Amino acid sequence: MTDRARGHTRARSSDAPSVRLAAQFRRRRAYFTDDRRAIVDLNLRSLRTACLLVGALALLFICLTCALTPGWLPEPVHFLLISVCVLVAAVCPWARRALGERPWTAAALCLGGQLAVLALVAYIDGTLTPDAPGTFMQAVCIAWAAVIVLPWAMPVGVVMVTEVAYVALSFACKDFALAQRDLYGALVGASASVIVSQLATNLRVADFEARERYRNLSLRDGLLGIYNKGALTALAQRYFESVAPHVTACVIMLDIDDFKAVNDRFGHDTGDEVLRALAGALQRCFRSSDAVGRFGGDEFMVLARGLTDPRVIAGKLDAVRLQLEERCEKLVGQRVECSAGAVILRDADATYETAFRQADEALYAAKRAGKARVVIQEFCPPAPVRERRASTADAAASPCNGEDGA
Image (cartoon, rainbow, N blue to C red; front, top):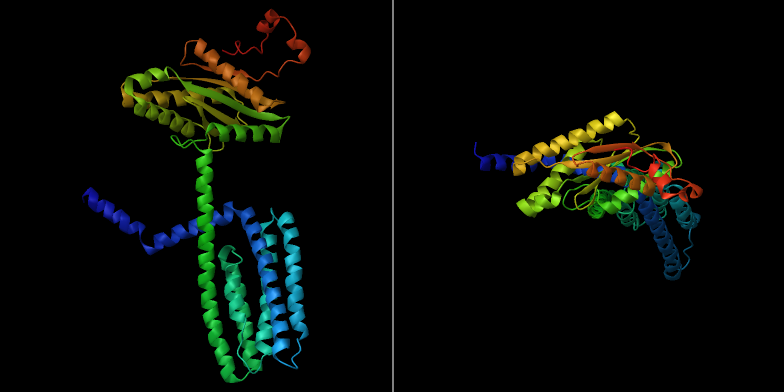
């Protein structure tokens, strides 16, 4: 089979309905898993708006009917509908603040509010107008399907339940011909609700994916796909602040030896491939939970949380150097090496800035020792102010000076 035929075969298999459906399910699962807080906030804001609109329309209906139909008086259920709408709308702002981290409680509130409003509308349209077909039920059902988006199309399930109840009330309280019209309207409304619900969910998923792409662009290095300096620094600072004063981690700085010479001799495109080789080696040799990023130019940084064994760290860095050398042998026909400096923090009271500074000093110690080296040293807490006033000679003799780890 030719390459073109294989390409067409792969294209046809990827276009199969089952494949597209599986991809759609994956997209939705990612949305409902990764965007929970935003889903809670948007659902509750939409629920509040919908309740206010339904309550306002119900009040407008009462006023217009009283004015246009002499002798007509609103039933208590009309005021109950308005009261329920106002109550649910009043609860929503509190729920947005209190239930941001409790998505299922927020979902129950949304579904409960939806069920209460739709049930009252179904009762009004199904029993209080015995000589006329339903007026508002289908419009409310279709509109409500776009308001709340939850997994497994749960809002559509609520619509279906209330539609069945509405049809049952119509056949119990209305002439058979009018009840048939309500049944037809319910079928149309339920079908439209499913379509509207799917469209609303697709729009939400597309918006989530667009936000994720933008977020990744702001966090990732465009050339290498790993964290950029800003994102890596922010992540490390958050970690140090969250576990202070008991930081247990390893901060590693690396750079490529004589990278400028590689760029000058082989060109910037080849230099970019060398950078990709080092980034790929770091991602393969360190854990997925470790933060790997490009600090700038040919400098890289790794934050390995909980990693404190010098032998393991040295083994990982040796593997990185070996993979880089092997890849560059194939790429440019010569060895390209890197140097690394690491600082180990064991239950330390440290800031990110202090740990980074010591890892950077360890890297420069490796450079001064002849390059293609790894220097690993223990974190040394900064000296108190009174000790910093000691003589330069005393400071140079301190084991925390960074030279002694080389």
